Amino acid sequence: MPLFIRKYLVSEILHPAEPAPPASTASVSEEAPAAASAATAPGSDLESDPGSDLGAAPEPASAASGFVELGLSEPVLRAVAEMGYTQPTPIQAQAIPTVLMGRDVLGCAQTGTGKTAGFTLPMLDILAGSRARARMPRSLILEPTRELALQVAENFVLYGKYLKLSHALIIGGESMADQRDALDRGVDVVIATPGRLIDLFERGGVLLTNARLLVIDEADRMLDMGFIPDVERIVAMLPANRQTLFFSATMAPEIRRLADAFLQNPKEITVAPPASVATTITAGLALVAEHDKREALRRLVRKEDVQNALIFCNRKRDVDILYRSLARHGFSVGALHGDMSQPVRFATLEKFKAGEIRLLVCSDVAARGLDIGGLSHVFNFDVPVHAEDYVHRIGRTGRAGREGRAFMIAEPEDRVMVEAIEKLTGAPIPRIAVEGLDPVAWAEGTGGKRRGRRGAQPGAKPGAKTSARAPRGRARPSAETSAPASVAESAPASSPTARHEDERNTAARPQQPATLPARAAGRQGGGREAKVESRGEDRGGAVRGFGIDIPAFMLLPTRKSSPGSAPIPPEEEESQE
Image (cartoon, rainbow, N blue to C red; front, side, top):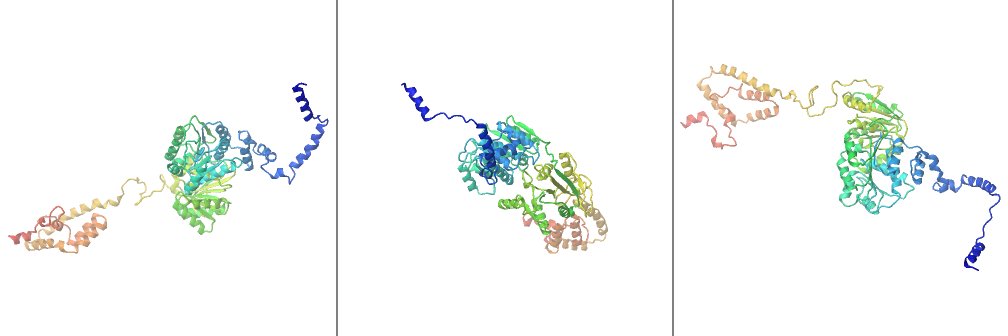
């Protein structure tokens, strides 16, 4: 028997063909309900295990159906669905597919529109394919402040919980040794502020030659804080064939110039007019006197249904002063500004997010990017100097479609800055009245507070000279006009004996100590009139002039001549003869 026939017979004996069941349809119909009931049973393992393939796979398609169309992977969609997001924002819907295609992006959108998720979600899918090397991160995210960098790191952990990706947070105020240890182990993403990243690079702690993806977030804030030279230096360390994502809330000419230098054929995404205010925010402006600002703030906080609120001040010193004032009046309040240590800043911010603090008085360090869930109110205790800061401040409320309220307290001298804000946003800020406080009107003129040692007069230019030095030019004519009259009156009455006695008294004056206080008083009196009066009182009348008399100051030795070369008085000449 041929060999191939024997192999065929053996295979048929060992593996006989199974006959098809005649009632397959009925068996499926009977077993399917049982499987479905087991899958949805209250105590079943499929329901309790969110990571199960059978129980969790349908969730992204149903809960995050809008994100499925963007091309994100299943682990990312699962994390998005668990966070409760169902539909992407306009900036996310346009940016995510473009980033996944590998193109550069120039995004301009108002604050609170989800720019962070717009670059974080596609980054996770891009980085999921390979591993990082020691001290050579695969991507870099630059943030202007520590708080914003920490928030991006938290979002990276939440969105990438089902992916095996690592990150390092490189910010100031933290241990550099711990940061170097994290980089030595190898990370996929570095989230950093420019200053600390340059410090680590100069010490050999990080290499950026392998970073193929760069994100520059809040570029306009980078410009305001003076980080642009550091950003340019960091970009020069990265490879030329990289993908760059550039996001900003405003698009000033300087920001446009940086974008042209950093990006290559980018897709520009603008979902709202630059520096526009979200429609979910109800704004108001209270015009009060300067001494009523704190009282106006306390009345507004008591009147409004404030769950939690940020109160912005222009200067760090004012943050501390207002914090102590509100605490003294019984409010649950905290303070946050750049001069505080990093652990204190983090602890204060966590207390505020947890609801342990109701009010947070802060500087503009908290005005960019911070996402505090359910923030009900924002108060501008000071009108921001830069109009763009107003948009970022009030953008902390009214986020993710929620309603928010923002109030600004202005003084009569803040007219110019308020008009600049209204011009930038394209709409006037509605005026509100504070109950119990007298209404005031805008100050006349250009407005604005003047600072200086002497203070400026109304209507005077900042560099103009004041009239405080006017008596300096009027003192000389009074002495000169009084001198001829005194000489005319005293000349006929003078005799040779009186003249000789007067010369002797004049020569003897330098030895009298009574003249020294008069000279000192003349220096401190401020003005030539005081000096002339002191001389007249000391010498018994107005100055006569030279004539045959020699003034006492001419008898003093000078620095250039020796003491022996002083003029000889007339009486000594007569005695020598």
